[in-house]
Length: 222
Image 1 (tube, one colour):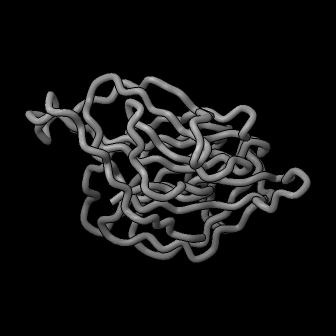
Image 2 (image 1 turned 90 degrees about the vertical axis):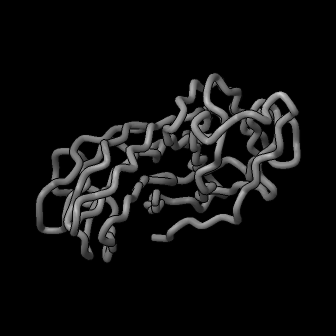
């Protein structure tokens, strides 16, 4: 699994009426490209483009400062004015969000999660799981030969951030309620004090010409 790293994205400057906005007026928003058959995309906040290079599957932006309140978020095919997502989101000040561009291109939609980035206790890390494989059934996430950590997760569902001991884990994705492993996740390293999102990505049965098969991606949220 890869730790997705993307070149920093820069918010474009606002007009003069926004000069008195303070840090207390801002939300923090991460955008994740999780649509396995969608092209690279541009991101627009209130019609202002905020990325300098196309965001491609399955990568993510860093957290971007966005003015709180109702914001219009567009996801456009890179280099075009064609919006594949056009949504109004209510963003609270001093709050962190992840916005996943999810599902297949023909049905692409935003999955918006509020991110609790409270510092883990000593010796702990926090992990959540998000199911974003559009043709995968409900799954459990378990420790290999051990307990189930997250059970019966269906497409577009997400767990809360859950504390675990820092260390290295062999995990596996199982068909919900069974011991049938559909995806092994060996050597997952979770560091003391860190916060992670693991999301299921890709297709169980990729369409013709598509090589984005079922897998998992790790995002470090802090």
